[in-house]
Length: 195
Image 1 (tube, one colour):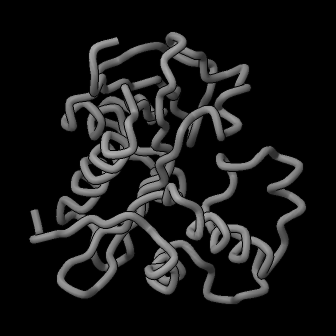
Image 2 (image 1 turned 180 degrees about the vertical axis):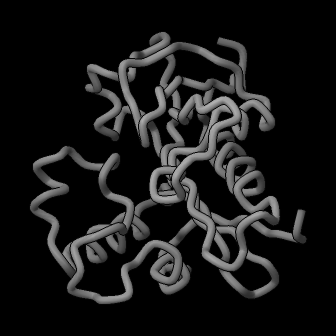
């Protein structure tokens, strides 16, 4: 694994966040990671620069919208993490609630091209868990694909894999009716405090 540092994506780091999840064209209506942060109607309404403005506003809140990984001074990755209660997962019909704990969710892990295969996703996942713990989360969940040994298309790999989460100490908490990239998604849970 590379020598990495993981930090909350605060407003002071917004330019780095733009490098990792912002589109190359500012008028493009892609990425910025809102698809599981806001409901489908709001996501569709966020067009072009509004997507970046929405994320910038999130970086100004007390709780950062996720974490960034750095190799030295270079930003190399992003992981979205937030209380599930703030997310559409709270109302999901496909991804079940395991229990009534106020869990945090990790749903997007992105490593910049040219930096993949260096253990950065592992560092991001650990950093996201650490950040959630620092904010009082009793448990953290992820909703990765259960792909076995099959290869996951990079476009859909942002949700992570069951194996990645298992290596980080998460355990299978539930199956789901959700699918990503042709693979079933599962609920992986890491308990941080006694339930």
